[in-house]
Length: 347
Length: 100
Image (cartoon, rainbow over all chains, first blue to last red; front, side, top):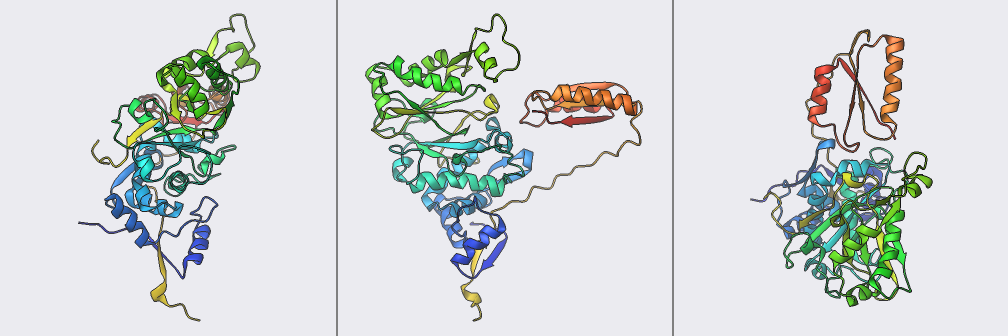
């Protein structure tokens, strides 16, 4: 039996007025939203085969229960097509897992955003972008799936800027932050397979992330040379340890793959080399205290090599890659992977 | 021109209210003299230093008794049950503070 949509109704005369109404209610991220009509919301839920009252996640710290109906409403507002809803639902499941520490990361002065990395067949089914301008605009699925998470945070989790969300600066990824992995142009294992799921499944991995920092290396011809630049950027963001994301674009990836390096090799190299001395961290103000004898030990960005996520994505031209540092809360939050379309209530 | 109500759009509210929680407020102490005071630091830099100064002032000015220092292991999470149980057992009142 299909249960009723239970959200409070608001009646407005037409679509343009509905957009302005949503602004007046404080329901938007600052950009116009698609009016969440009951017909459209029902269409998304029907596509995904979800009952509206299904509990997708909870935020115990805020006493909030996130139902499929609320996820669908916010997904409609973000501009999602019905086929995107299962990805949004999986991402909500992931970011409400205990190890993600959603409340801390969304409220923190550190100003992180949940970054969604999509793997598996759903990427091509939805026409997701894993290539040129991967963190940038231009692809509906990337833009609206990422935005749907933000609207869920704003409207369902109460993460209103200046109220619960106390980000000192925030970053542009707080509007939408969603990429796909380029599984087709690499011999590397996709992220979801590395994290224990079958290759034929679709999955999301969500991490609490700062903005991407571009890495340039135009001269390296060996894996070590290219990764030295990546490690350098990681080390200079390492005022906190935690789960970094490294996005390797095709030109850099070609050097690594030619050298026979796997993702595991990349991780091991970065764990060893993304380090800065304690003296240096004290000198630049990341650690407290005066520099003392013995402060030359190398402080790693990664506690274990498994913490760094390595993803293939980006445009074919350009000797760039990217490091995405973790939320300032560091190891308080761990990336979480969930299959798309899996039974929500089965665990 | 009158709006034709048959053509109104019905929007669904995207927000959720907090689930009501059964919480009971403890009665305020009439005075602080001799009371055992818990000082729960959130684990951020300077939080313990701040609370130590505050505890000293409360003792000096209001005659607070024993001070019990406690610390959240993770600033971003609710204090674990064992910390809260310890404070409940050992203190008459608790001050918690956010440092940074």
